Amino acid sequence: MTNDERWFPNHLKELGEPECLELLAEHHVGRVAYCDDLGPVVLPVNYAVDQGTILIQTSPHSTLASRLRTAPASFQIDEFDEYTQTGWSVLVRGSAAYVDPTDLPADEDRPHTWAEGQRSLHIRITPHEISGRRLLPA
Amino acid sequence: MTNDERWFPNHLKELGEPECLELLAEHHVGRVAYCDDLGPVVLPVNYAVDQGTILIQTSPHSTLASRLRTAPASFQIDEFDEYTQTGWSVLVRGSAAYVDPTDLPADEDRPHTWAEGQRSLHIRITPHEISGRRLLPA
Image (cartoon, rainbow over all chains, first blue to last red; front, side):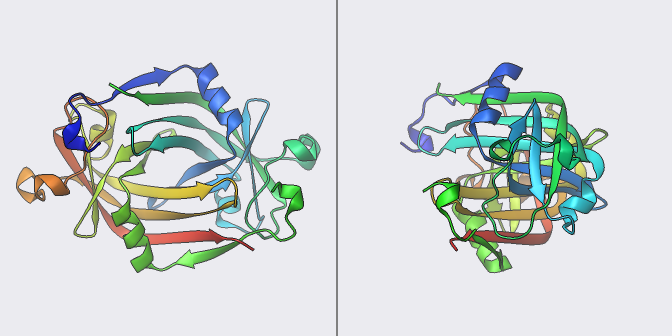
């Protein structure tokens, strides 16, 4: 099926917060975003959902750590199917802050990072606004 | 294979700009990011690569249109494999501007949007910096 064979384009539907939270809970890789002097930066990270917030893990010496000490931050996940040209996305807008180790959940509920390297610092993104959209077949 | 069965975490490799541009040329969905007063916003969009820049399409009445008239903007693509815990990502940092219709490429080289709706406005993101990373098996 190519674009030319489609008679009707697919349509977008807003997702409610409960569905957004379900999608967040089901996935393990997303993108964290912050703004620096040159504009937005978007980087993939492993994450875990902890009590309605997003937990990520990084090295205390990383740029991410220096940018997300206390800062506005967003977190985004999505999934698309090239063939059906459908998909969904969730955007969490909020603020980031370092997590005190005593406030971390049990080991199995923390983010499990795929990449090597010491990542002893946990950062929590607390949502101010959660929105999402689903692109449905026509 | 679970996390516990892995002896060595996967390792990250920086991608050169030519490989980043190849990956951009091979894909059709990515994420555009901009900053507003509350921080970063990240939204999935269809795109096309045109002479080393990123072309996206939107409605002239959209928030995206009002935010990207002339503004710092980023564009990001990635792909991950949950099973092997590998993947790659490319980040384009640059600036956005409206495209004069006379500067658009031929129809087939423009972005083909999956969602319904009038999207008569083209926005071009001209890169200042292109970077990427690949997460390789251990």
